[in-house]
Length: 141
View 1 (cartoon, rainbow, N blue to C red):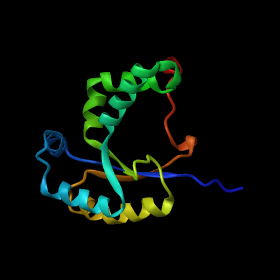
View 2 (cartoon, rainbow, N blue to C red):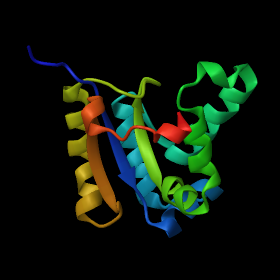
View 3 (cartoon, one colour):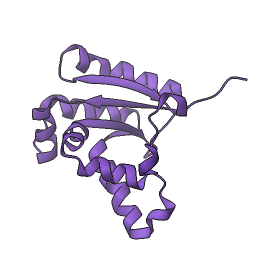
View 4 (spheres, rainbow, N blue to C red):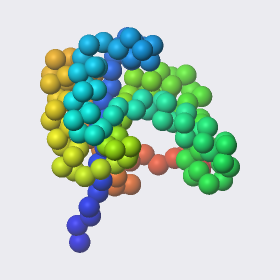
């Protein structure tokens, strides 16, 4: 039986460009990325902001209902990991974190030019298969 995984596109910026994006002074290429994503009904979400939002929501509604709370909180409180995640962006399609392989491949193909030109540091496609994704260490579950 074959599995039908969902997918997500992620990309990384240089620390300097990430700082510009967070300050509201996005480099021109990031505006181009935004327009491309809009054609796919998508947007780029900073991984750090998404993690911080998850932690804030868990603290508002009760951490017991958020299985990744401890792990996520430890991640955003670690300065090295915070810097890494401030430069990392996940692509959401119609406000959804994961989507079809076809959608992911179309977005990946449209963004590849920015990787080739060096404006993106990294561009990856991830699937929802738990075997391919890190799991929280036992002490953070």
